[in-house]
Amino acid sequence: MTEEIFQHQTAFEEAPIIEFRGVSKTYNTGTHALEDVNITINKGEFVFVVGSSGAGKSTFMKLIMREEKANTGLIEVNGFNLTKMPRRQVPMLRRTMGIVFQDFRLIPTMNVFENVAFAMHVVGASGREIRREVAKALSKVGLGDKARSMPRQLSGGEQQRVGLARALVNSPDLIIADEPTGNVDPNMSYEIVSLLTEINKRGTTVLMVTHDHNLVRDFNHRVIMLDSGRIVADNSSGGVE
View 1 (cartoon, one colour):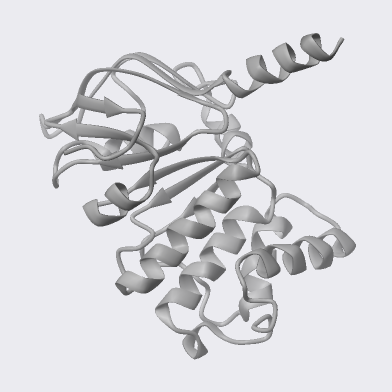
View 2 (cartoon, rainbow, N blue to C red):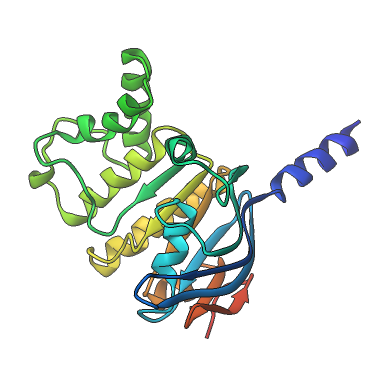
């Protein structure tokens, strides 16, 4: 019986959460952003996505969030077939993921609690759920005492942690972090990735775009490297050279 449970858990952990099969994307301008991309990211993985400017990282992330549609190929995320998905289902897809942005995207007229709670209002959570889950999310990122502070009263690192709490509050299966350390100092960069690593250890899949090769070297996670729209390296032990 124990063996059966173990096999079931292992199968669950190794189930794909993101799958690209023969995916290409060309914009109307003629720019070939991605070309014949094949990749599988399993539940519970932490993956860095790296590459120079123009390599295709932003397009890769936009396709996962269904901000853009592929020209060819199959994309599946969290059990959704994005290739055939009608626009009305896109909000359902995005409710299964939390997104952390480089520029924080906090609402300046709302305090910390309200910024995080906003993500729960969108999905129709009750007042009691919101109070409970926002407090938990702020505690996880070390901002339990900043709930009533306004964004302008926070440092850049604190603002990014509010963004992370907002991404966490609906208990998503997947966190997408698009250059989350781009606007914070090196020490805070390590804190942000350490927090994401702790969240990942609890079972949440993390996909993070970064230009910071020091972070990639120091955190032993899978690294996917894009160049000219193609995957040129996929190192499951971290540290793409």
